[in-house]
Figure (tube, rainbow, N blue to C red):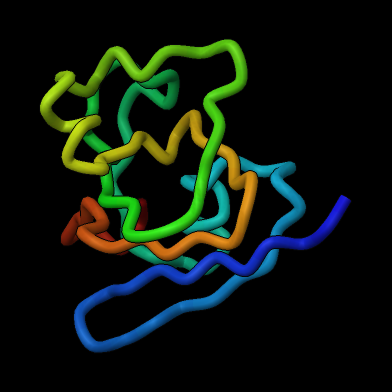
Length: 101
């Protein structure tokens, strides 16, 4: 399985990580110690939503119930249940002011 390059845009900074689609995007963000918000971790609340600029993801058999159809059409995803299936670029990360996320 190939390793995908995942770029996370945070203000003027870009964080890059590689993954083989084995971890959720939210777990990858936490590995980078980014202060991203989380709550349900099962796609129901939408607290962690971010914008997919490029690339493709899969939710496997799960459903992103925390997104409206208009959000999905605008390119928003739920990283708590999303896995990379290609190189990705994400922005508009849901950040918290609590560094202990």
